[in-house]
Length: 83
Image (tube, rainbow, N blue to C red):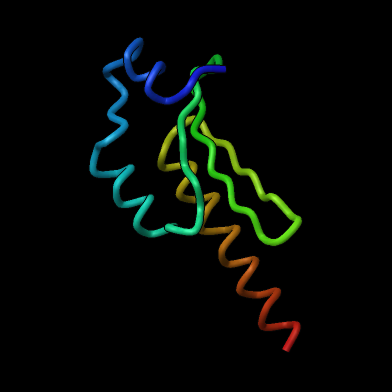
């Protein structure tokens, strides 16, 4: 697995600093987001909550955004039901 910088050097057509990535990082600031040069290249988002680590993977930013939205909604629902 390579870092996003290595992947970008080999695949410059994938905009790591593009507007969609910036918006995703802004909208889900608690998550660490990076891209790995696997086959196919994969976007990964990681969040740590205490001793738990939640990892999401997707092949494109749109799919990653959808998964982050679902995970956030599920977490919000779980918090409401705990009240």
